Image (cartoon, rainbow, N blue to C red; front, top):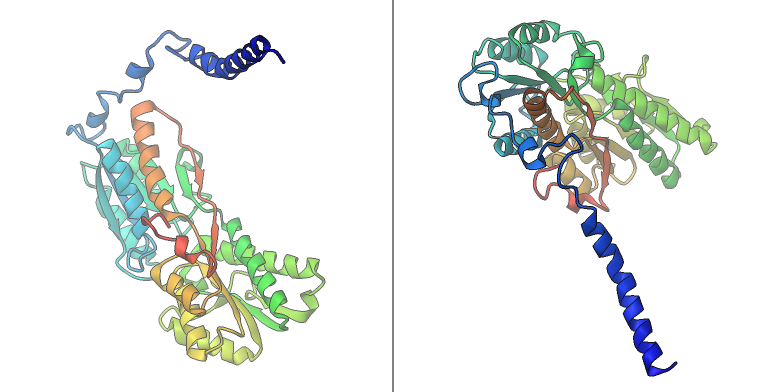
Length: 360
């Protein structure tokens, strides 16, 4: 190739590489098709701070059914992060108990709904049908409501209320992992799903059902179902254990069966108790154990071998999105929109990725 042709080829190639950058710049959107300016349109409505309470600032309350076991800590962090970003005053409330305390949550909700400064309400709804009066009162006052974490499918005005949370069906990920674990171990015996069924947490009960069904399906597909007795109680919502003596009752359950090779819990209360029971019995290398949530006790148990894995719900999002959603409903008139936080399976292989900034 001659020198002149070589130079022409280089210049041509440079122009070819430069073209996409020029095309991208030429496609910049300067204004909306409707003619308005994006900078102005992105600004908040000046009337928003005087919504409902008309005191010059928005105030949201978030109320959970168990603030005493640490699961909801990242939820409050997420809500605070969103509230601070938006200039919203946030009131964080919840039952002080380390286990589901729905009566106490309802007591708090009935108090907070009377507060004239409240402009938006976020609440967990673990007991289906128990929150209709709260929603009715809030709507009468013109206060938008968002639910988070636990899902009540029949709550008053369900389709007009946003929900942020993990679908119960996500528990299937844990059920499949449990099945894989027992098959890999080559053990045969009983797989149990303990649960505090008498507490009436519909969401948790549904998780047990999903995990149970996934375990059975995985074992059946592998031609191994006959090697196991998979027991999730008479209604497949869990084998009831004593909420007031949780560890001892799980120890007794395991010992009474005599051949337990797998166990899974479905919330942040039963799962640490499973880990404690496995530790007390010194069976971490003999039993596959899985559960829910990624609190300090679950993470420690995964590291020390008393728990093989746990499912995270990304509770940071369960606080962050409801605050954002209420704000958008008030400021923009955006219709209530749901967010599925999905699930992440945490085992010893990836446990050190959890909780770097409280997101899990």
